[in-house]
Image (cartoon, rainbow, N blue to C red; front, side, top):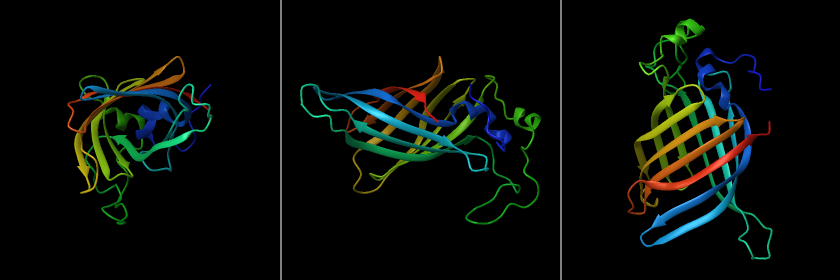
Amino acid sequence: MFELPTQLPSELVPLSWLLGVWEGSGVLDYQIGDESVSREFGQRLSFSHDGLPHLNYSSYTWLEPEAGSGSDEKTPLMTETGYWRLSRSQGAGDPGPGLLPAEGAHPFITAAAVETLRNADDGFDIDVTIVHPGGVAEIYLGQVKGPRIDLATDAVMRTQGAKPYSAATRLYGLVDGHLLWAWDIAALGQSLRTHASGRLKRVE
């Protein structure tokens, strides 16, 4: 049974079912022109918190050996890191910008205060920032509603040498104790289309 950690900021309760370390496998299936890239991969994903009103996110993936290759070596594939939080305006009770400390009390320290952030769809709007080491940073807007999260990019920023990548959507859900996710991307000159999906089990 999963128990909420102590000292969890009230703002993180709607996202608390994500907390922990998850591990499992997935399938990459992406169409590029007339060719399709299809591979199986493994993934280790972590959601944690450090007392601030956001979740820390990290993901590490690796390619599984191809069938018939005679090798059991796993090939590192991709890492990404980021932050997940409820969407709201930052005020005097929040630290920043930079290292500037907060002035006054934090405004959302009770469950009743957090409830005022609930949207008309009976969920909570969220902001997610994810950074890739290949020079891509994504800002997602979306919603958490119970054990389901829907995200779509509001902005994608790329360094000069990054590969073409312009938009994405991500879906996460908790089903029978497993974290299921799906990721669609628009990249390499392609329109938004199916990219990858996975099924993970909480291991820590």
